[in-house]
Each structure stands twice: as C-alpha cells, then as structure tokens.
Length: 211
Image 1 (cartoon, rainbow, N blue to C red):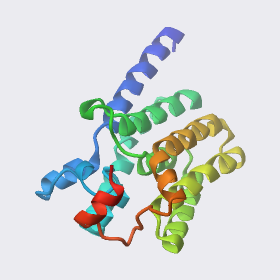
Image 2: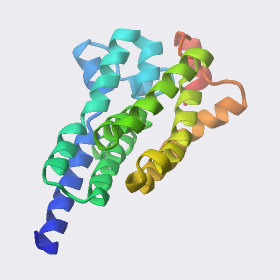
Image 3: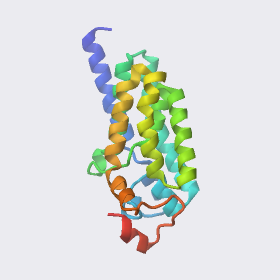
C-alpha cells in the first residue's frame, strides 16, 4: 500500500475509533431504563463504579460491557487489514480519547478503564486479562474502584515491557490517560473521602463527593 494511502486509511480509522469511543454506554443504559443522567448523580462519572453505586450490578455490568466492546469493531478492521502495530495502537488510543473527551458531551466523558480493557483485549489479550484479574482482586479486597484502576493502570506498562513490547508506548499512554482522568479520585483518596463500590449513593452522599 502506498504511504499516502496508508496515512489516509489510518486517519479514517482513527476518526472512526474516536466516534465509536465517544458513545457513552452509561447514558444509553440509563435512557433505556428510564433513569436520569449518571453524570448528574453520585460521582458524576458515566462508568461502571458510579452505575454500580447508583443502580446496582445489572446496569453497571451492562455499561461495562458496552464500554469495553465499542472500540472492538474498528480495531478488528485494523487487524484484518494487517496495519502496522503502531497504527493499531494509535487507533486504540483514539477509542479511549473518544470515551474520555466525547465531542457530543462537551468533551466531558468517562475514565477510560473499561474501554482500555476492550482495546487491550484485541491488541494484546494476555496483558488485558492479567490487568483485569488485578483489577478484580483489588476491587474485591479494598472495595474501591479508583484504587483498583490506578494500580492496574500503573502495572500495565511493566507487563507490556515483558508481554507486548510493540505496544509499550501505547500502554504507557493509556496509563497516563487513566491517571489524568483519576485526578479527582486521587485527591479524594488522600482525603479518605473516596466512595466505596458497596456504598450506596444517596442524596447526602452525592453532595459530599460528586462535584
């Protein structure tokens, strides 16, 4: 493929990946269930942990699944076209940027953890599964999604250096994005005010930790 055609193709897939990522699963789940916007309740994050506290495991797991799979089709296209690993990594990052900074919602999106799992599952499955196992163990032990997400994200580049060196730069970029998106959570953890996964989000709790 001529270089100019490759650049055009990769650029088009990056745009498609961003648009796929910018669809926030939590908003669709809540609309179909006749519920309010999760960005206005609890921690105001349209992701798994806030949905779990607000609406329980069924809707939270549905949100998790949608956010994880939404970037898979465009990544499978990239793999089917045998694009270079660097190009596939760029396309995967665009999925996460779309989720974190969706153009449809004033560039205010989620924290990219579930979407990162979906991207890594396509590009480097062993890394994705190890990080997911780490997240689940930590979430079960400490009952705090932010701790599980932050530790898993920081572990990912170390594992990538061993398991997927071709994608090390992409995994490092994912880690930086996850850390950036968890800035408020890090401050709450320092203040010992971070909500737990098993903590219901009543109105008084919303006032304490949401904005």
